Amino acid sequence: MSRAEITTPEVLSDESVVELSLRPQRLVEFIGQPKVKDALDIAIQAALGRRETLDHTLFHGPPGLGKTTLAELMARELGVNIHTTSGPALEKPGDLVGTLTNLRAGDILFIDEIHRLRPIIEEFLYPAMEDYKIDIRLSDGPNAQTVTMAIEKFTLVGATTRYGLLTSPLRARFGLTMRLDFYPAAEIETIVRRTADVLAVELHDEGAKEIARRSRGTPRIANRLLRRVRDYAQVRAEGVITLDVAREALKLLDVDDFGLDDMDGRILRTIIEKFDGGPVGVSTIAAAIGEDSDTIEEVYEPFLVMNGFLQRTARGRVASALAYRHLGFTPPQRDQATLF
Image (cartoon, rainbow, N blue to C red; front, top):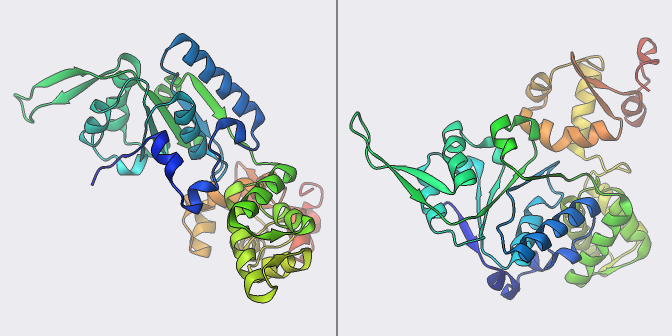
């Protein structure tokens, strides 16, 4: 099985599955991230005007904000193919040789979770990114021979949720670096309404606002919640999502008024109940709740920190006064001055 999935704009446009129809088909249809979208549009139009290959591009930010979607839209706007793979899937340089040698001029190579590339893969990519050449080893051992092969000029698009884990040499080779941030509730509401139209769901205004408010500023979560609320409405509310229906469905899903789910609550309760509110290391938290520490740092922690439930300090994680009050605890008097 090939390690890179190849997609052309023509194939994408002919897909009729709902999952693809939820994604915008052109860059102008992409909702949110206005600065990223404008900068990307300028870069694409400039590259097309000069008939040059677009600079290598890096998207970073929390998961679910549209990094993969933007990469696919870049291919559409440029009229080229996109070859998709991920950092963990690339174990040795040979895994990339076939993909790189089959690239056509201007094609996009999209590597998700690029921060998880092995050092040997990074070293292999450097000459490909800079000089559009790759070194192929013909054999192993003391008499091994290496052949340098030219490849077509291409655009490497990387996506990462852990920008700080990228090595400096790799970061320096990206001409465009763009951060995606959490979406405001109004933009999430627009996405929820669009998804409801695609799914042919009757969604009232207040129901859309309630789902958007609890979606943690993340389109992926908003679409997931809408699907589950749709199921609830279909079974218990004649298929209509009103404010009350949305609230009952989200309560059933353990998603509270702030958008915190069961795992968020477990993280905060563990810090408060088992470690006196912190500071405590993330690996200790992970062991206490039976979750991977990387998942906590990448998926849950950014939202908790941004919304004031959690503080990251040099000594570890500390639950804020807001977290205490939200979970029904009284903040300890000794921390009152520092937890607000």
